Length: 413
Image (cartoon, rainbow, N blue to C red; front, side, top):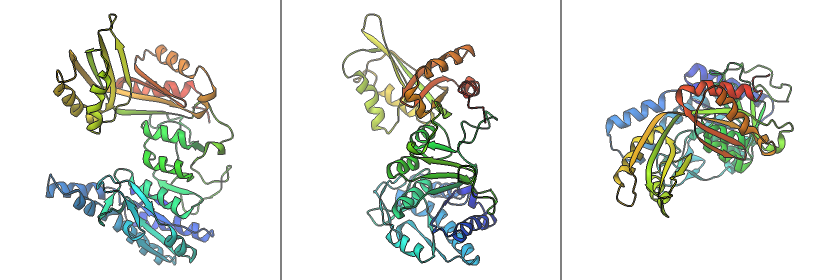
């Protein structure tokens, strides 16, 4: 069971979390819990760190920001003990959850689940501080954004859990953002691959790394709300409580052609005009960006009629726009010959996702036609077996999401 920041925002909510845990214990389940810091706590710790020194030691940064989860794990252990549930808190280094040496955004290398399973079999509930582990230098290392979800999946894999329940402030994964499309439906099940695409394309329910890890280790995830009453019915028509099960494709009997519509407004576009077209030009453009850890997504190349020049358009996170533009301008004439660079962050990426697209033709054509009828101009397109993404002007984002959601029948309950 993993509980996010809003679920543990104060002691009253931590008591509610305790009631959810006790319910599972009373049902005869062995439970391990992973917690995030209280809502807003990590932001405050980061702000203090930056106030102390704009340029600071990443290892000390980790020591500071990891304290948020340490507080939550201790408080929940106390609450559970008060409810008569044997419990103790664990920090990442005590398990130990071992990471690589990249302080601030470490990746999990290994986790030993033997001691946890032994304690759980004796009836103890380990409450584990998420987002953290121990680096090869013996110091605390944090896992970066969404790290508590990743911690939870790693723990679930290490102890061989039947399921990893992610408790959050929403009651599942929806076909699209309900704030844009009120008729959006909560999905009972979604395949790992679909959730991975949804998460990477803008859906905020789960972080990409946690879904990747769950898919690799075959850890079934269940997204549910911590604000549902702990004594609410735990079995619905599908044998599960209200929420969304993220599982292997084989567990989904009735595969829809399209599962959901995702969108991301954190996009920017750069166009290099009249680049001299010669072997190695793409490497000259994208190599320096890769060296600067800038992720490039959509790429469109248009060669001139005489074949001497080409226009290269690509997308990237809007936060990297200034940095990428500076890198490319600095290389103009120094191994990279182009006439002009133009850019904008007034764009949005809208994506259609569904494993059923593998076996159905015409899904993309329907989308393009529907958007054209609404006057939405498409700047760039990328596709995969289970995804179609289009880049459009930001002003048309909500119209495009609503149009595609209705087009594929996702409004219907």
